[in-house]
Image (cartoon, rainbow, N blue to C red; front, side, top):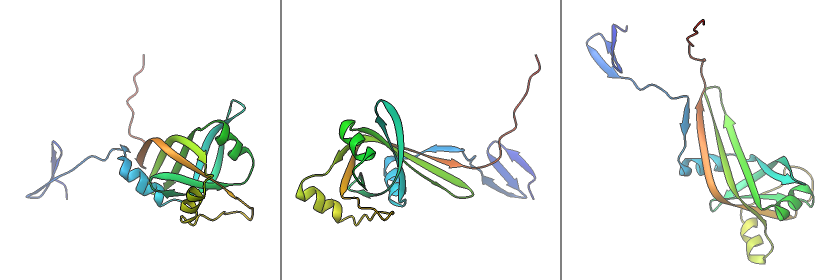
Length: 161
């Protein structure tokens, strides 16, 4: 039974406990962003095609703090060859909270035997029954993330003019 509140404390009978208000949005450190991305399998590649923004869902893996995905010949491969600057977004949620990570980086198709051998060690398999013989690696320029705590909208004060 709560008997009173004193500046960030809750008085329970004779026991006083500290309470910490929960922030609905928290900025994540980069290390946490990589950990969360490593736990996911589906992300979104954002690039430009003919000057227009495009977004593609892709399955991926994190390898050595880079994002690795496979693709067939087509728009994704061509757009990353023409425009190396990309965004990659990964997110997830449950009933209580969610998170989102955005990687701004440079995408490049892998060509050398060493690059392809390293990519193949990630054991990234296509989700669809199509041949995806091209590997693309995104080297990050920046990695940002946020965690969202879900809840009711706080009360708002209304003023009548």
